[in-house]
Image (tube, rainbow, N blue to C red):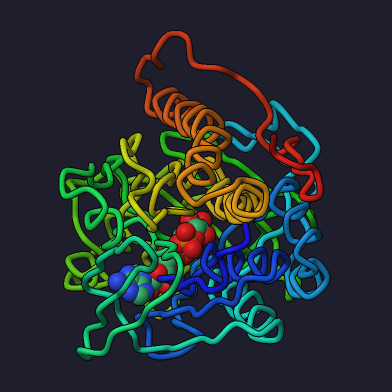
Amino acid sequence: MQSLRTALIVGGGIAGPAAALALARIGVRSTIVESHPGPADGVGAILTLAANGLDVLRTLGAETPVTDAAQLITEVQMADAAGQVFARHPGGGYVLPRDLLARILSEHAASTGAEIRYGAAVTDISSSAHAVTARLADGSVREADLLIGADGIHSTIRTLIDPDAPAPVFEGVLGFGAATDPDGVHAEPGVMHFAFGQRFLGYWRLPDGRICWYAALASEALTSREIAAIPTAEWLARLRADYAGDAPAATLLARTSLDDLISTGPTLRMPPVPHWHRDRVVLVGDAVHAPSSTSGQGASLALESAIELARALRDLPDIADAFTAYEQIRRPRVEAIAAMAAAANNRKAGRAPEAGVPAFDPTEHRIDFDRTIE
Ligand SMILES: Cc1cc2nc3c(=O)[nH]c(=O)nc-3n(C[C@H](O)[C@H](O)[C@H](O)COP(=O)(O)OP(=O)(O)OC[C@H]3O[C@@H](n4cnc5c(N)ncnc54)[C@H](O)[C@@H]3O)c2cc1C
């Protein structure tokens, strides 16, 4: 597209820097504005990058620093409450802290010419025939040829595109986790263990020998701030009561100290978003398609959307056509994966899954960035 030179990207998480990297490949200069004051947000939660996400990183030239920093999981094992393994299958992907992935992608985007401004939150936008203008919380304004809302599941840009856009849906559980001494709990290196007792618990062995576990605690809807306001001792006691009798959850929880326990917040997903774009503004990543975190696909789908958006902007004659093509390519895939994850959550919770939900392996998807969109 001839007239496209500059992009303002709102959000410096995963989708934002990935979009900047993809746009650099088609000759568009990006400015990323990120509301956090610096590149590392300090939140210790860990995410999974599946083979489809890794393939995008390869396209963007960012695969090696990520795989060097991450831990490779090659097998998933499922066991019952007594610890008896009843299924194992190959795969899993790479696990790494979310803030580390964001930092690697941001540094790579900066090295390809993107400007990154931290402590800069967008509060309002307006489009004209030739440009889009964003207003920041400090009162300054920024102008670009297009604006990409990569501002996560609580997206401001989503509601600026459509004030009636749906909000994230609470999945009924809060996430908790810790890294703890194994104390006799066996975890094979490179294996992700799923323990299906009275409750679900996932865990794997860290390179330093400790075991990292994550749990889902049934709860009323609480925000991260509300969770933080409740003493950690209370959460640990609730987790120990909920998982009593489950192997190896009870042992791991007994070994977990108050200092080590972290909350990863409420488990949320985005329902289908009716409007993905308006005028010169478009959404990518969790802002428009966050599946439940149990899918393990949030980061990988964000990466996929970033490069599909750049392909569409490269190949279609104007912004409106490009946004339409991008949505047509992405919407069926991300909504099918979200539906599949919701059905799996229902099965885990003992509820009947909806009929007609597709079943496929989302990790097999590959995008040929060089192939032209007709
Ligand atoms: C603090 C945090 C911790 C997370 N932990 C996990 C985890 O443990 N496991 C997991 O699977 N997924 C986690 N996620 C979600 C995961 O990063 C996403 O599912 C996925 O990677 C898609 O990334 P994204 O870039 O679309 O959204 P995000 O990673 O959420 O990034 C959005 C970014 O936009 C910024 N932002 C928001 N509003 C504005 C605004 N108005 N102006 C400027 N900037 C704005 C946010 O500060 C954030 O950095 C976490 C997200 C966050 C923000």
